[in-house]
Image (cartoon, rainbow, N blue to C red):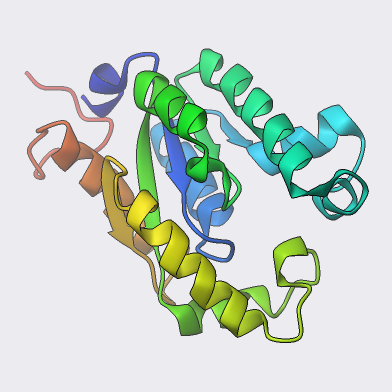
Length: 189
């Protein structure tokens, strides 16, 4: 039923770094038997450089332009589950393309959870700063109002990925007006 309503559109995860877009996106893709694509991995594949290397060599503006082109191309291949970089949804053309070719899902996370998760990885170009917590707070202030325009918002927390993924599928069913009593792949008689 959900896949019928989705049609050729993509389920597009948006949110700040550390929100779990890739981990939850993979689980949702598996639950719905859809392909999963991570836009950052796709960018690294086409550019043959890591995201931090792209930021360092070309700067954020050039990276965002490449990111936009890659996401626009990926959106032509639905249905699929697509995880985007934290800043992708800030681009108006990218938001328009997602609205036309997808259903956006914001994984909304609290600051402490994001800090705990992003502190484990050193590959976050925007956090190469003496006060990464202040950077994340600023990003939340700038981005959360834009993320809030997503089709679906699912709060994420320190829980099993399967639990959050199930909540995402439930929220998507709600978005499409599918009764909550139906399982994701269930067919109506």
